[in-house]
Amino acid sequence: MPLPAVTRVPPGVARPGFWALLLCVAVLSLLPTDYLPPPIFSLWDKAQHALAFTALAALGLQAYPRRRWQVLAGLLVFGGLIELAQAATGWRHGEWADWLADAVGLVLGLALAASWQRRASPL
Image (cartoon, rainbow, N blue to C red; front, side, top):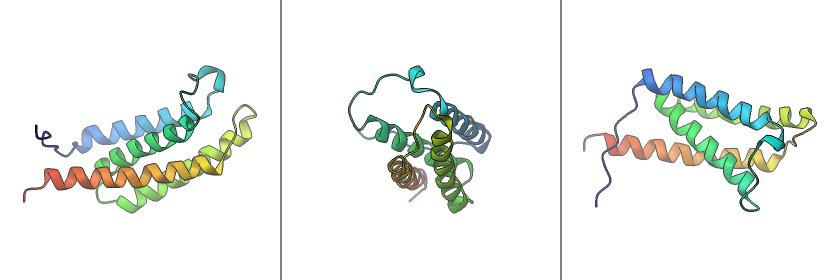
């Protein structure tokens, strides 16, 4: 069965969605671990980082298609700031490996957005 055609998310939907997701990631990243679900497997934390930043990149690139590198650079800085903020909380730990997982997510999000754009473009 072929995959359904993917169309571009309208900026009027993508932009508020991107900023809402960004706020959600920031809040969840800074909550005490007591409020978070238990890890499913040992690399779950890194997978969560990669998935969150994949979604942020894919949606951010839909929201701001002409600002590709600004979106990606801004999200990379955002990920680093989250790690610094976590280190300052006293109940979370900032880790460079988490920031690397964020960067992997950005690459995956870029690939996903490019795939959507190719599929939505007429041949």
